[in-house]
Image (cartoon, rainbow, N blue to C red; front, side):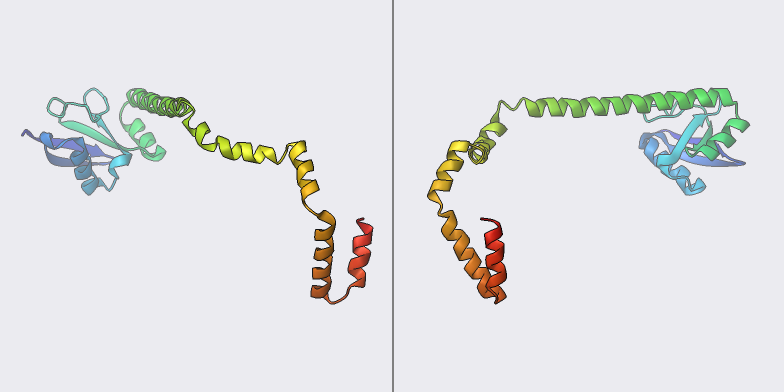
Amino acid sequence: MVARRFSVRHEDSTFDVDYDTDDGLEVFKFQLFSVTSIPPDEQKIVCGDDNKIVSDDSDLISISDKLCLMSINDQAINEAESSSGSSHVNEELIKSDEELARMLQAEEEALLLQQYVAEQDNGQMEQKIRPYVDQVLMYEDANYQEAARKTVPIAELEERALVALAKKVGSLSPLLDFHVLFL
């Protein structure tokens, strides 16, 4: 357990924050949130001496006691750049953008790998759905269609349908005219 006191500058204010370095950066960010109201996921902490960004893998024991806190939103970054060497801050922001790009690329590669692995399932999915596909393809086969037409009494079905419709509507003459049109 190493207790440290950091002097954190944010906008025009300076805050003294006591911190146990064994707790990790996440706890420190929540402490900063309690005094600055900047949510931890929007915080960017920069060392005051060398303008390096404090990240999760930073050694909190060896970093400077003087820190600068910025909000990730553009307005706060612009204000911080004007108050503390904009070239160093810009370099750090570019580095963080590069890290984000690397993370996105790694995520995209992982998704691509998942897709590749799914395609390598040795045909198990195809074995499951093949019988259903074959059954549907049978409906497109001309020989099966002709056999179905010979088996199904189309004229009798049409006549029954017309009679049922006539009973439903109550008038037989318009339906017969309709039937004659389609014969």
